[in-house]
Image (cartoon, rainbow, N blue to C red):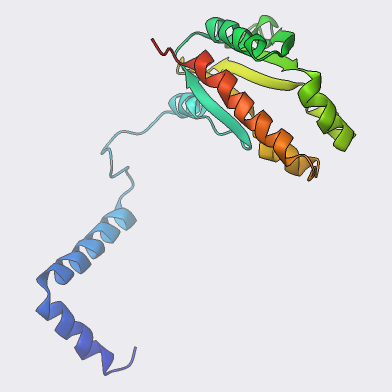
Length: 193
């Protein structure tokens, strides 16, 4: 900083008391942050490792996935999705209840169900463009209940599928799939009555 700038800064601070308060407040906040070993936002409250894990389990952070919360249980959400899928003229190919498997440690899994569905009008054009998309077909929804008892519907972002398989000539099909995924999931997750 040049010597000539310091008097100008001091003059602007002197002419504006709010600027002085802002600068002082910033310095005080920095001093508190740097010298405090506690959480200044909730004094004296620190999460235990178990609470932190529960909180992390309640966070929905899947990358490239569209998620929406459901007002219903996993079982009812799955049933509602099946009705909506069939109403769109598509077939439910399989329903996989991941939580029915008992892990080796005997701890039960939270409700988690995968629904596979599709139809030739959607699948065929995409497979004709790029067969590698078969790894991501049929289309699917995952319905699960997190550690905080919130139920979610999730599915892979359609743009992710398009980029992953480098399909450029099927923009209209991907737009249709994107709209369809939302049209099915929304009424399955929310009551409009």
